[in-house]
Image 1 (spheres, rainbow, N blue to C red):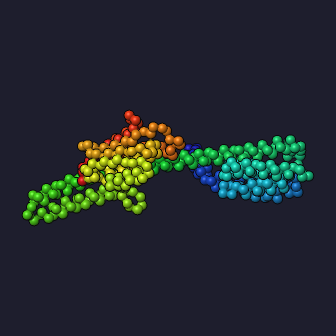
Image 2 (cartoon, one colour; image 1 turned 60 degrees about the vertical axis):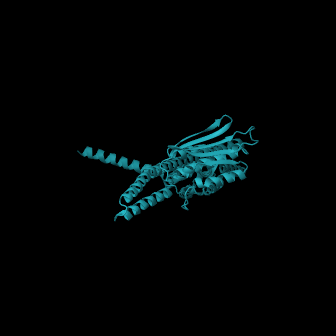
Image 3 (tube, helix red, strand yellow; image 1 turned 45 degrees about the horizontal axis):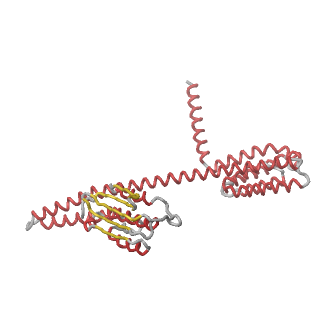
Length: 386
């Protein structure tokens, strides 16, 4: 029984140690402390030699000085040049190279390649000046070739490892940022799908409620409840309009996304820019929900932008028609006879953005060259016209 209790206590202690070690590895301050202690343990190997050969420090004083030097690594992340300066001080005073390795690694990791190169050059130049002074210890390189074979590799290797770690940090940060961006995009797409569902299903029920209330108002004509049914019908219509406005609002200013009413302004701006537009909009399309009108506006806007980039001067034909039960947006422009002198500036995401917007409201999207023209066709469910 005692053996079982002892084994249980040991397992619990080991598990606790693992948890603490895991937390320490994830803590930058704990890692800096571990680095400083590791450096101090290596520096301690030189304590007997410091008092014997290099200077008059005794063992206790040497230990205190080296401990202070290793402690400078606690600020290696925000201020890596401080341990670098201390390392140069140790190099000139104690002929100590260990701290320089940690300092150059820190400069390379937390300040990048240029700072690492500058640090290595400064370290080698300073060490060479110290080598030329009388009193340089033989075990640090008695001849110039032995000195360079000792000092240069130490600095270059430490700084190179630091630069490699710096690049790994940048890659990890980029991956985390990319994952966060993808998550935000996924959340945005999901919100759009929810908005579409809310608009379609709740809007349909509100429309049915309004229609039924109107029917009941007619049946109760002249009765006591006629006015109540009419008021209920008007309330349902108001709720439907408010739902439309809320669903399509964008930005912090609360302004709704432009709809079909803004298409003439787009056409006028495109014409002034040198790409005339022939705009034809079915009158019934203006009774579409704001969400669908916003999708049409987005498609036409992007098509006009693409036409100005890739086919400047060509007439753009924009047709928005209702072909029950669908709304069809068709944008066509002739392809230029010759390629432009310079490639247009384009991120290459416009077509993908149009397709995403159309599919968000349950439509289909095609785009590409056809018989000498570039044609974009988007079909959306028309839904119930207001």
